[in-house]
Length: 473
Image (cartoon, rainbow, N blue to C red):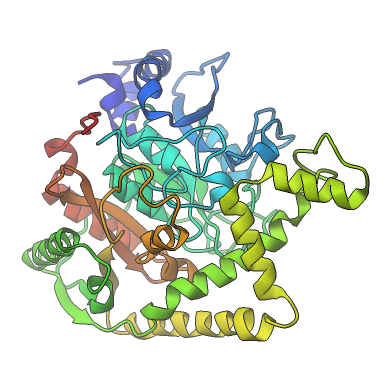
């Protein structure tokens, strides 16, 4: 087995036994990038570490997370030449553990999208089939991990942007509880929904990376004080007696038949392992998508106001007054999808429509939270598909925003409620594309979903059975 095929856990074991060196690890990944990047297009920029310390491990970083002295572009013309003067808290935590960025990864512009087709620089491709999208907005992170160009990566998840690309690329992606991982240094899309999280080859690596990046941060006012936990401690525990809810609203209209079948197979496997699986009702699901897009766009409209050609970002070359400078800079600097969401967000926050849309969305948000609370009085975790379908072809949804938004059908309610959820591959469809299952947990109960995911992964053995094909079909 090549060095680049190993999980981080395996790399660390070999480093400890002096079977390989950190220099060999970095060189293996750099050679792999040279071989595969021309097809995948996952990177916005590459970092060649000048000094590789002993026991260093490489990582890929989504390009909306700041690293001091490195470009942070958010895959936008608006920030094409922005070099960050400081590092995000998660980057400082990684560097304290000798985990070094090997490059910044492509994404949908300002994290707005579900396919990584809305990047200003390039369209990232899915390693399983180069004609398909890798998902989004953390598509570069997921594609880089799935194609073994990085051993693990950081992404950000506002409405499914870690979990959906993890599902499309056949890897593991975790959206932590809101407040568990510091957002300091993450370029904001929607501040009450955004969360940094791990994208990894397997569940054990996911728990290991969460151990490193989680914890209270006084620089982030929304950071929770929960004390440090070891998320690897309970992975081996069996799932006998675990109560799993299967919300039927996530298995209905809009979910592809093959995806439903795989999720039902997962439910049977959990029952064979001794878990109790029951169908249940999630009564707010029909409102979740609309609620999410109202809140997310409203917050985006506010957050992206700073990119005006004066304080931050691209400045238009031609203008005759201040108003024209604002207008031209933002018109030229932002892509179509970002403009669409700013306009929608500004509309729902305007005086005539605030009560009708934004205030109502906040009220529905409370109902969604209460609905999850009701379900978690009966169940330990919930099982759903991660995405309604497997990876779709490049270009099929990018001109139809509503169809693209439906790709978030199964993931947005978790961000609305601030809960943790993990996507784990659970098989392959008839086209040879990965299917992802999603496990949703109670707030700050990452241990239970990681344990359930790990126990399933041990039985499914997805990584042993399947490998990306890098084919165009």
